[in-house]
Image 1 (cartoon, rainbow, N blue to C red):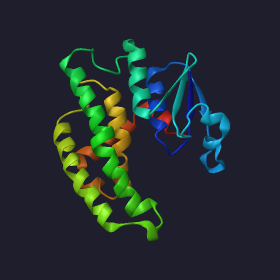
Image 2 (cartoon, rainbow, N blue to C red):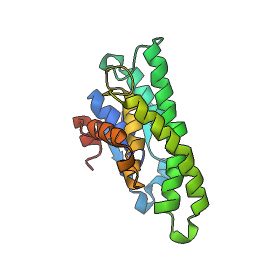
Image 3 (spheres, helix red, strand yellow):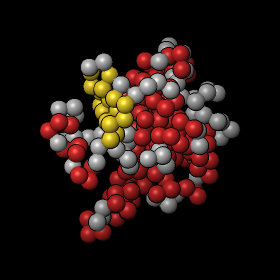
Length: 201
């Protein structure tokens, strides 16, 4: 398997899963500052020039969440996903979608309009609307994680990878102190050896 990857992107997510699996893979680094993701060679891998992408057995898969789910199912013996058909599997899907669809988009918008965009392009009203979207979601997740080590059942799974990746943003936008449970949960997951390797460079 080959993972097309760049730092400070969602490529950390599948890299973390690959490290948890302990399966051999090749890490193909792309330098976004040099525009390597927009090269004709890479756009044959991902026509939009986005990272990550996974090449496996001659097939290409894109979208970080899809790659993570695929990897968990490819190696069921590693138990990074609950048993198909179980109630826990339903909750697993729920929290994966919650991370990627409910939580990440407004958090990303808020971060853009408070931190990442040039000041002249930031729109306070857009940032405030985004904040009002994600704050209830953060409260819901904080409640869910009260007394829990992991978001589903009593075992680490891909949903924890995806949630932790998104939740790492709350420190960037200055909200970590408002959600001590989420801060502690994210810290626990990010201290896993596989996570440390995935985020190391």
